[in-house]
Structures are given as structure tokens and as C-alpha cells.
Length: 238
Image 1 (cartoon, rainbow, N blue to C red):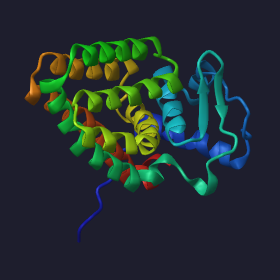
Image 2: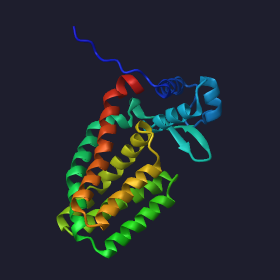
Image 3: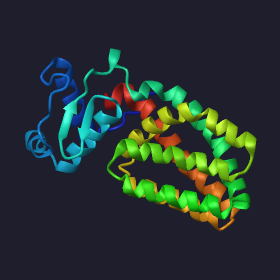
Image 4: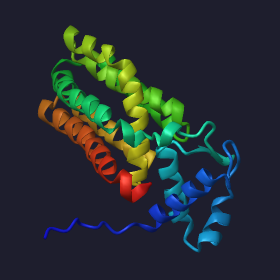
């Protein structure tokens, strides 16, 4: 007889599940403020990092809103019918597949065709990303600008048109994938920013293979996060 593999739950996943149950039961109403990280850590008798990871996970699936300097609040309204970002797994994956084929090609072409103006614009966007650290909405907008600018640096009108036509889908995809990335990988915004810097450096150096490779690795990491969390969301995280 074949047995299903059991994946041990992390402490943060257990905390995440218990807080979610308390929200569902009405202990914490929509719009209400949760106890502080210090208070939750004392209540669950775990470290603060475990609580922060759990709250990041709840934010990723749409159950809480973390306001920098203001605390953590229960989402209002709550996700309808238990819908979460994980439910978008198939559509996210489809967008990621399209992105991989288009953006890797754009990065390669950009390395051979970019102008000084293109590089200056990309550097400017990187500075915007750095200034936006901690501001989620601004960071997401800068991220979208970054990928569109690489398409423009390819100087291929069809590539540019395809990326521009995907703008709305990219906004949804990047917002969701960034949240999943930060939760699953515990990656910092600074680490994500460094990946963008590395891509620009490869393009500026005119190295087509390196630019394509770095873009491919960048998108592939998000693919892995989406696939893994979508696979385990029904019985491990929620």
C-alpha cells in the first residue's frame, strides 16, 4: 500500500492556522486590530520571528492587513468563500509561463540593443525601488515599470506590445507572487531588489546569456513558490 507523504508543519504554520480559526470564529472581527507581535509571541510561547512569519502568511492569503507602524488588522471584508491567493494558482502559473518566454527574450535582446537612455531609466527605477522599501504599493508599481522598461530596451515592437498588453495581468500576478515570495522564502525586499540590480548589471554589460539567465532564474524562483504553496495550501497552511 502506498502512503501519502506527510510534511511536518512549521511553527509559523501552526500559529497561522490558529489565528485564522480565531478570525473565522469571530474572536477577531473584520477590521479589528490583532494583538502585537510581542503579545502574540507570549501567548503562543514562540519567538517573535515565528509570529511575524505567520502574520506574513495570513497577509499573503488575504486574511490580514499589516500596516507599517500601525499594527496588524483583520481584513475587511474577509476573503469570500475562503478564497485566497492560492486559489489563483492556475492563473498565476499561466501568467508566469508567458512571462518566462517573453521576459527572458526581452532581457537577452536588451543586453544587445539597450541604449544609454534605457540603462539610465532602469537605474532610476532601481532607485525608486530602493526608496519604496516598506511601501508595498509603490514597490509593486516600480516592479512593473522595471519589467516594462526591459521590454522597451529590447527595441522590438512586438515584444513591447505583448508586455504592455499584459500590464493588467502583471499587476495582479506581481502583487500575489511578491506576497507569496516573502512568506514562503522569507526573502526580504532588499534581496528582491538585489536580483533586479543583477539583471540590470548584466544588461548594461551587454551580456545576453547572463541577462537571460538571471531573468530566467528570477521568474523561476517565483514559479517554485507558487507551485509549492498551491500544492500544500489545502491541508498544510490553511
